[in-house]
Image 1: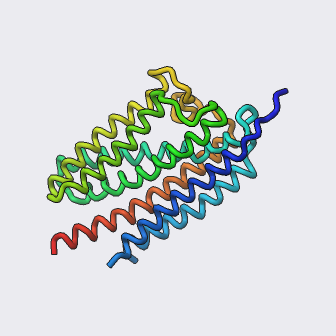
Image 2: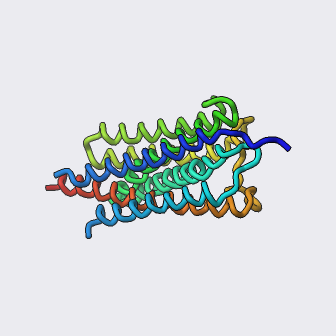
Image 3: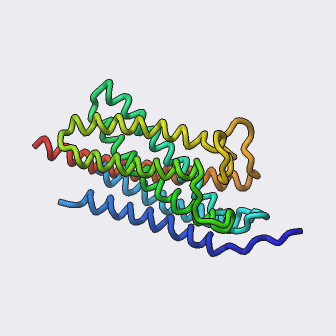
Length: 36
Length: 221
C-alpha cells in the first residue's frame, strides 16, 4: 500500500492565504464605507 | 441599521463560519490517500471558484436587465458583484497553484482551464478600470453591462474547458450530470464551505452596494 504524501505545508499556506485575502477585502470595504 | 452595517454583520458571520469549515475540514474530514493533506485545499478552492462563477453570472444577468430597464439598482448590484467576484477569483488563482505544486509538480501550466480563469480575472479587473475611467453614469453603466455579459460567456467557456481541451485540471466532480464523485463526508464539508462562501458573498455585496449607493446619492446633490 502506498504511503500518504507529506505535503501539509501547502495546505497550511492555502489556509492562511484565504482568510488574509478575505480580511483585507473586509477591511477595505469598512474603510471605504466609513470614509467621510 | 444601515445596509453597510447589515453587510458587515453578515460578512463577519461568514468569516466566523469559515473557522467552522476549517475545523470540519482539518479534524473531521478524511485525508485523501493519493494527494495527502494538500487535497484539503479543495474545500476552499472549489467553493471560491463556484462563487466566482455565480458572481459573474449575476453581473451578466444584471447587465442584461439593465440594458432593458435602465434601473440604476441593477448597475450598482453588478458593480458590487463584479468586485466581490474579483476577490474570490484572486482566491481561486492563489489556492490553485498552491494545490497544483505538490500534485502536478508545477505551480502553473498554460492549459485551457487555468488560462481562461486568469483571463476572467483580467476581464474583471478591466471591468473596474473601465468603470473608473468613464465619468458619465449612464455610459458607465451601459459599458459595464456589455462587459459583464461578455464575462458570462467566458464563464461558460471556463466550465466546459475541461471537456473541450486536454488539461491537467480535473473534471467537475459536483457540478456535473449524475451523482457527485466524492465520498459523503467530503461532500458535506464542501457544501458547508460553499454555504459559507455564499454568506461572505452576500455580506460583501451588501457593503459594496451601500458604497455605490452613497456615491450615486452624493453625485445627485
